Image (cartoon, rainbow, N blue to C red; front, side, top):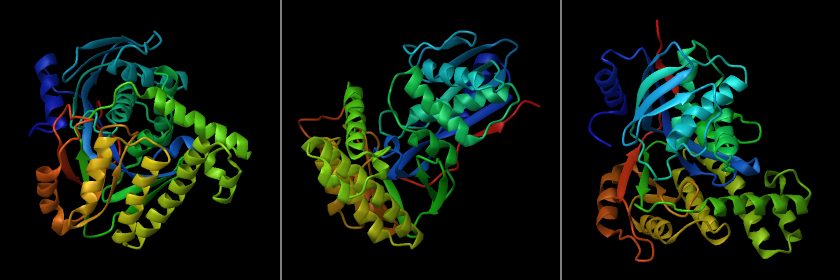
Length: 385
């Protein structure tokens, strides 16, 4: 990230490349998941918040069904909307995929030319891919002068990952990106896709902790967790583990399936309890639930890592920290801490001084800490007149 915002950089890049002001501007935020991890593909509950880090597209409609776009740090791309998206096209697959599925669902989409810029730290478990998909979908809709219910856009964005890219993700990231509200997290029922704003307790801050580690070749592990959950639900005779109870767990004889199901059942309850704690302004209870979540992800779901364990454990020892856990899919990337607002500066300074990436999982990017506030969800900032 630089001192200039993504909006400023995208706009400047558009003017430099196309020689005029953009007439269409969209933005979509990344997200941090406060609690409720790996519950989305089990029809469960999650409690993310949209971040003050955006992907912005500065653009203008074109007369043909094509997209000509450039993004910071990547090669420019040209997309023919009459063709099916190519899953091997890198970042362009998200741009093409959402336009393709919008059109397939009966929405008017248009071609556009534009420039993309991002404030979302890549690889830090903050869901830059979902933000890219949501901002791109709004650009394709805005170019045609059409609109969409944000929840439908989010679910089509999930299908981009599932059907275009072949990644068996849930709907958390896209729903978080479209449903954000200032000063609030979003309690998401991933089955009904109902989203309820939940105000953050006063006097606390959310601090994102980027370990500087990055995931590599773990898509198969994610798919394996989902398969374990589906097998456990089948044995228990429920539609998804969201429907299982603690008492049901005794019926799982396979130790691995028991651990996976125990995490999901417990995590759903922790998420509901966390929302109640937030409504009551009980930051201490919220922090305890976050730390319990990390322990479950480590011991039962096995998706943490040496770096995520180390940074979360260290954070939990720091004055003013009420709880900490990994966030996102796991294995590398980022964690999140709940810190008293009056201790945040000291917390960040102490963590920068004390945290050392583990020898067995070295950092490949800078270790960074960001106190963040909740942001509004994806939107079209400027439409062609």
